[in-house]
Image (cartoon, rainbow, N blue to C red; front, side, top):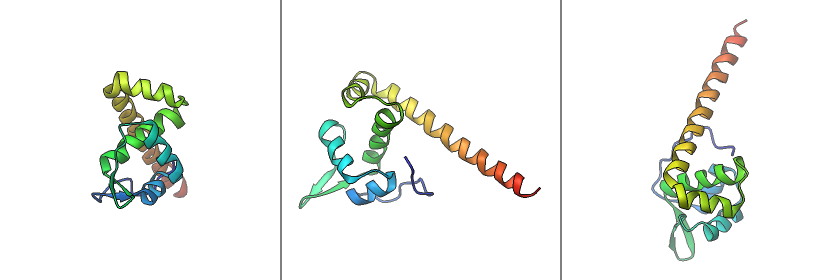
Amino acid sequence: MARKDDDSIEKSYYKISEVAEILDIPASTLRFWEKKFTIIKPFRDKGQRYYTPKDIETIKMIYFLVKEKGLKIEAAQQEIKKNRQGVDKRFEVVERLKSIRSELEMMLNALNSKR
């Protein structure tokens, strides 16, 4: 999942197109996952979906299960249903490790450029 450089979520609500851009996934995938995962509940107003930062974190967790771990939709649903807290923790650890790796790569690149 290629995200924008600024990984922070600052607004209260995001349109589906913004979430798709932030997470680098098609809006159709978001709509599909919304149907399959009842934990994704965007606010709707006049047919427009509005996602909260918490919704975005939930979608990131689903992305982790489906795209990175390679689970099928049904398996990801079961994983969340039986052990939501455990899935949240694993996701947080993986995200933190990715962040650390990125920082280390930047430091290595900085060191190599000074040679």
